[in-house]
Image 1 (cartoon, rainbow, N blue to C red):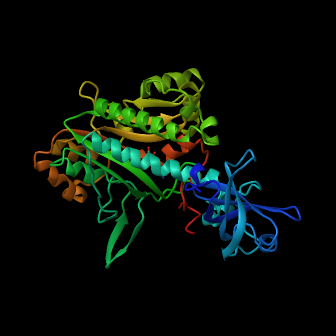
Image 2: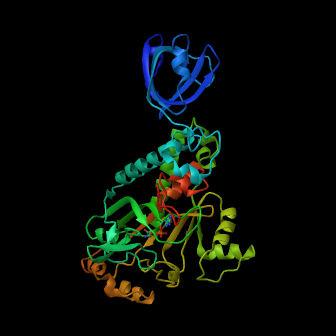
Image 3: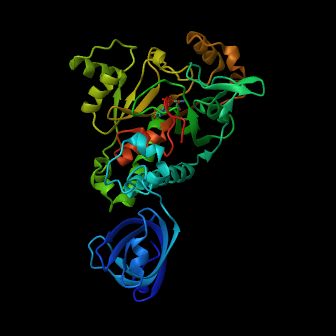
Length: 421
Ligand code: AMO
């Protein structure tokens, strides 16, 4: 409906869309027609009443009529109908109420996702998602990062660990990539700064509101920098994205309901892992140094540090083999996670770039250096010191749209239970 404007008032216009609502009051029929850009009210009188009464909600129609200014509070314009043609009839009963007035469970909605997207509150989430991706692209490109695409079908486990999907690939065993980690590091031999936005796959049997089997990650890697730079770079990106999204959503319901869009972002606090343990211990949750932060402990931390915060300096043994330890305290690593309340949004760090140290770290982690020979050879080619991060796009969109379940922000989510639609 974006094409309708004041200059067209008094003219015959044609609009196409779906019928969101019909109110039949006898001699008049009010029809609300919507497309992805908005809605308009059309009124059938006289001859067109008979045609209007036959239309079912959610059918696709084309309407021709005279454009007027509307007195109704929800509409700028109305169309006095001269002609209606039904282009595709919606057959009843429909599986869900696409206006969202009658609530359906997230599962039922995803089963009929294409129809669910006719609800403007739902489609707005995906507009935010598209805007977030494009502003991330634009910002990283401006910062000198080159967009790359690394393979998703891989021959060896990317980071070690057991959570990989494997399949037969022309009689060889292949895997779906769990992250672009090894490739993005190898590219640092020559490309200086790279980023990728792509799908990754994790065969984790997690039944939670934040885990998917297929998720989108934004990954960066940069040469001659360390984790302090990486955190700063991620913070700047988050600030830009939040400001772009809040400007765009200023006039929508979603804006009013979301504290991060309404308030100016404070500088993002940094808390070390050790400080987190102290806070947890003061709140009755005792974790020894080296223990992972459990779901319940992250919830306690999320209460203390509202909004975005970094947890830095994780124990080396908790982090993957490629993360560099601190020279002055090798038990602690140059690493960070970006949190939003209890939710982990990103992780990153300074990488090991010396081959011997990488090899011995692989061994310490119980991995075999020879399984990583393809990767390790790049470390003989003068690879610069480097650092980077991986940010879960789906989780960031949860935060930006104030959604409590990651499935809300993914068109066709894949999880332990779901493989269709
Ligand atoms: P990590 O494994 O922490 O780090 O993943 C990075 C971010 O990706 C998101 N994420 C997920 N989102 C939804 N469902 C999942 N199953 C899932 N798994 C991860 C999270 C997480 O913070 N290679 C490192 C990154 C780096 O060091 O550059 C990595 O993959 O938001």
